[in-house]
Length: 487
Image 1 (cartoon, rainbow, N blue to C red):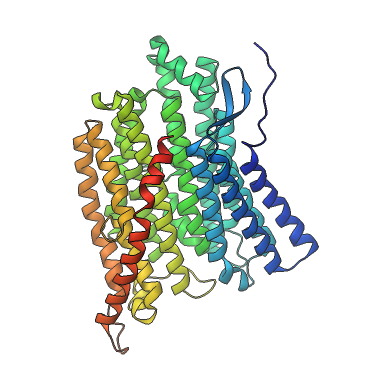
Image 2 (cartoon, helix red, strand yellow; image 1 turned 30 degrees about the vertical axis):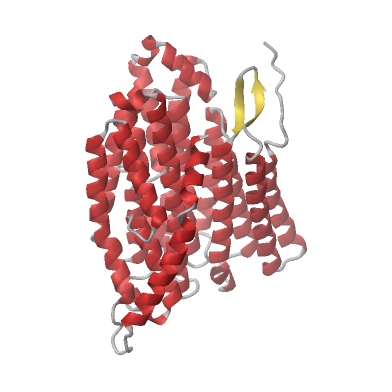
């Protein structure tokens, strides 16, 4: 077999654009030395990356860095979707960061460079075809976030959050690498498809205790990244101590990266009969603990953090159904994988919208504050409050938030197709629990602020009108995302 690798530069174009953005940001900060120019270069690079990712994705699947049939980089519909979402998330977080950067406590050049580096890791992650590329891309996404969390000058809370995040993430990466090393020692393969074929065809390997240990370590290391219970304790403190735009990026891009990595190894490399029960247990624990603890929160960012923990449970649920009898058919597997990707995409978009509203309602360079600080905010700022309420309604899975409703229905449908009715019931019960704190926060936005005169009818009508209009527009997108996730 020839050891000459093929290189497809068209498939690598989104990665080139993301990496080039980081280099151009450094040059702009060095040569121009103007904050506006640096931010503009970063925003233009993120937009170009999103456009390039979408265009390359329309040309069908492309493979590169191949030796024989084994390829380290596979760029198809799902990779294009992931790369586009990462680039758009980076663009959105840059927009949210303008008040923070204007406050002067955060160095603009370093901030934009680190965001661009994280974007490059996310773009590569969706196309990773082997364990090395997967873990390196995931760490490239995560490493800049350690610095971003603590980059704000004079912030003790930010420094503490950065140290917490760093220690936990390093442990998680070490655990995942140990699992990958054990799998390589057992099979002699690193490419995901070859690894999956070996484990599927060798029952003696699947039954070895060392195989179970390797799978458990790899899954546990990736579960840290999505803050799944019991690997979740770092998330609330880190989100609350980070600057609000960085917390938004942590809650969206970082979690999406963990989901994409976990989905890649579960779908292509690890046997569902081994990972399914573990993921089902993680899903039940994660959604239940996340929702119950969120009920007790009194700080805005901590509530959103625990909410994101619960949402991770909904994402894991379809993957947990794969070990059951109905989940072994090809159609059920494809539907489960697509449901997980679709739910993750719509969760991060709604979560980013919620954080954007918090940034708009809070002082520049401030933290998220307490829930009581948002009392009556939608009466003072009807448009922002209406957008915040719509995002919360979408996360809860209620109409007119059609995107969130579609995502939850897709997950439940995948669970029923996989003969996991009990897990679908757990998802439904947890969704009901989640209504309590989502609607409580939405009601706080419209509560009477005290001496300020209240006009609830007009505000509610405007908010519902905007929500309905946006929901109609968003309602056309879910099936397109689901179709891309299947490919």
